[in-house]
Image (tube, rainbow, N blue to C red; front, side, top):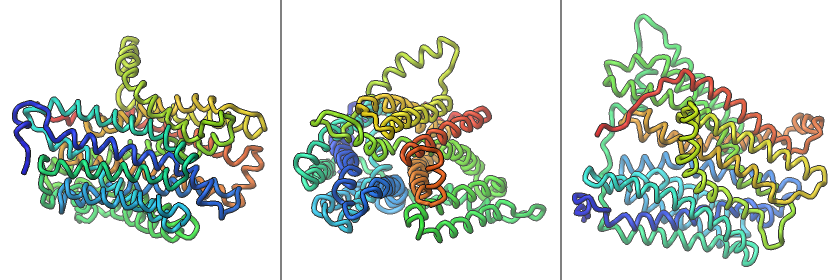
Length: 517
């Protein structure tokens, strides 16, 4: 039974508190386990490996996990849209999520059991990620849509609130009570999240799954690639086939790269070359699909270039929970302070920087004649992430030189990186929403999550490269440690891409696809 009474009176729907409470518990659950994962791996689960290799293995495991979290939204969105609807998919994926947490708590001394738990959490967390926010939107209609912004603001605040306290508290539980308790508490919170979500089952507005769309993104792309033209060849199809060959080649590297990195690299080749080929022959989809569907695909392909240029930012951002935690382990700090607790700075700064930017910085820039457009914000955000890693690299040089360095110095890279996050992450979805036609907005959300997956792929590939004897010799010739070399490499990577982003932004044709009143 749907509770639609509030939706026709302009009041806040009565079912919203169930979803907000669910989100609060789920986010604490996720960040609670995520933020202690790297230190747990290094100090407990990876003791079988030589000490010099543990940090590298821990980074690989962590970033493979993050890749899964941001890949499985494709599966969750497809199941909800085509078969089951949002509510059943969120509920069942949440139970998978709970099972994953249970595995972490029970198998803290068993690699197979623990990694199974990580897979289940990636599947469950990723599966519900694209659905909960849109499920909130389903609870509103024209009469009370103005209240939706309040709820979405509450969502963002809840995410950072949960991350802040999880980052502060869970390292303490790990140190004082051990991994079973430290991973068990997030599991309990995820169970509470699922139970609260289930309690509201009779109140939710449920939008049924949509029938197959003959003019979907993939159908238009398929038509563009395969349609024959009597007076033209199929250069676009040839480009797409090259992508398939390269993807197969990437899968053949599974032995050296690992399955996750090889599979993601194959996906990158398919999307990059398939997208380029479709762009070359997109006009051939006219006549088979309506003009708005074809132009929608064109808009998505343009946005994908923006997303591709953002992927280096995610490479740098997600390493704050791996590389920066490992660096913090080498810094001087009070006995009561755990290195992983530094991650609490990120959500705390987000909650401060967003209102500062909106109320102070952006108006000031406009008064001086500089318009902080979405593209400019994202470009500067990528650049600030590069500056953050230069700061981290300079800290690492002091550590490598034997100088005792206080952990308080990490505040500087955290401030720079979080400022970059606010410019990129908080702006990216706003930009994508405005550029994509209504029929393609769901596709854009899926590709936004995939950009995070690809960003973490670059980390895995960089980590794999430094295990090559030639690269090891090259790093030795620079006089830098492996950690410092990679920090400056990622900084240069981000700054170079920020320059490319600025060049692309100059010629990008801005659109306005907001819904008319």
